[in-house]
Length: 281
Image (cartoon, rainbow, N blue to C red; front, side):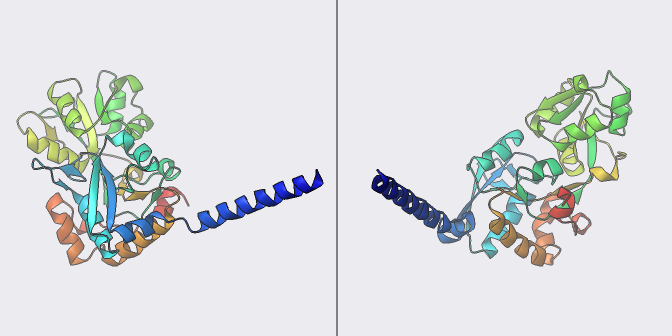
């Protein structure tokens, strides 16, 4: 009996040692994408951050930055996976793609779920309203003060939290899957306003200038300034660090600025904030 026990124990030790060796030599995501020369990015349709053009091309500030940065890492092929905004983090963690390239804001809550690169831009919000801004809305607080006002926000977006923090009640919030639905909600008078980044709301207003407008004066808490970044699975810190190294050398250069200029970004959007600062680390 003792001999059997000893043999069983030895077998278990060998299995454990073999598993440890396998784990030690497991290929990381960084090693895989550099070996294959291919990476998958996840994005949601939101101009100008990431979107699909009518001919099927995936572009926007974040995918174009991803292409430039991954090329510097020897990864030439960037495949894109379209998903709804609220499914980006679950999709990343489930392995549907290797990185979120959608202009996602770095927030402490999201930092618990993903590993962010340092931000590639900073930007503030505004509102999309009916022409002339008939409800005279210039802040989230203005919406909170008027219980009859409805605000459309993308499900899973930071604007949902910003509105609630400012006194907007849940019954006033219309959660929609994407920016197209935000535009339609205002045009159809199902919402009095939509909230999002200034660039996104201006882009939506340009699609229907006779029916909606992006307000020019929006008062918001400076703490609500958005800092967008690429996001990785928590275990892919080596990939995140490799991307950060390339980003730090490239952001603010003429090549970077010319890459993002078609999407409305300029030098004023460049930031020296780090993900660690924004995550609360």
